Image 1 (tube, rainbow, N blue to C red):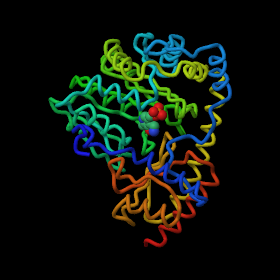
Image 2: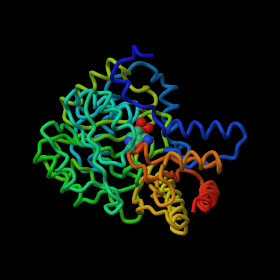
Image 3: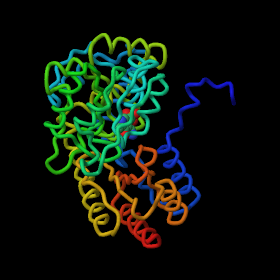
Image 4: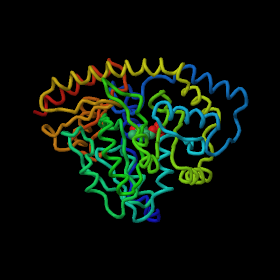
Length: 391
Ligand code: PMP
């Protein structure tokens, strides 16, 4: 249809969601599919979180609420940011949104306009460039290397900055690579951001999923100057297995958050009122920490198992992921196209993975281990068989 707005002609649908849907459909047709594609924990939402939402529903929390979120939730978020991330905010600095995706989308609309450049390190979460384009901005993709665990270096960031640069998108722990930036790395990036007076949005949605001795550093906490140029994006989907609840939040300077709130007031209004009471329960550390730890223990076993299997397959490799629940595997020695590789793997061996091309790196595929150990084992057996045929 050629009457569509120019802005949507440049964007593509979310391929990760497409592939996950295709795998689900094949399963429904009775095909024995191993889905290693989903960016969603396979655990159910912890019971105390569900109970809190049910209680709120029963108490009549069924009406419109404040656009930027229930005050009690915003206060809980302020406490969380102080305690976990050493960030000093008040409820005025917070907006509750319909998920991390919604947060980032509204933020782009508030901050980015035609002529603005947004620096995005590749591999990136596939929605970032599309959101920038929808806001009429220009994504500036900076390719990172396996040698630096796919983390952007200060030198690379500095080189990408121009007079048009408005925003830098930082995602640690990273989807799709599992990379986690160290305190020192974050501090060096922060210095460049401050020196060049650009904004940074720090997507911290995987912050609680960390392995080994990895620690999460929130960029806004490494200095007073960077704090003023930082917007934090976080949410409940990954840490608390709440993907379907659609709950996220932004924290940042008051006037910017107010603007995002104005946008939200004309788009979605407030987030589902009773769902926000589930989020309040999720932030109650005493009850949630045990559930989060249990999920983390399961992710750790799965990660160890998958890394062992990858190490045993010749000609493929990946950096050791330190966070999130993905491995980003280099398949360039056996295939010239990650799309072809992923299509063939799904068609011939019924294993769903995501081609790296959609994350801006065609040499790799992304495997998610947010699924049970048996499926991982079975999927890896099939991947090994498939790769055997390609040598
Ligand atoms: N950021 C990253 C890096 C993600 O991987 C995702 C989900 N795949 C999101 C944000 C958005 O998550 P949600 O909208 O479910 O909060």
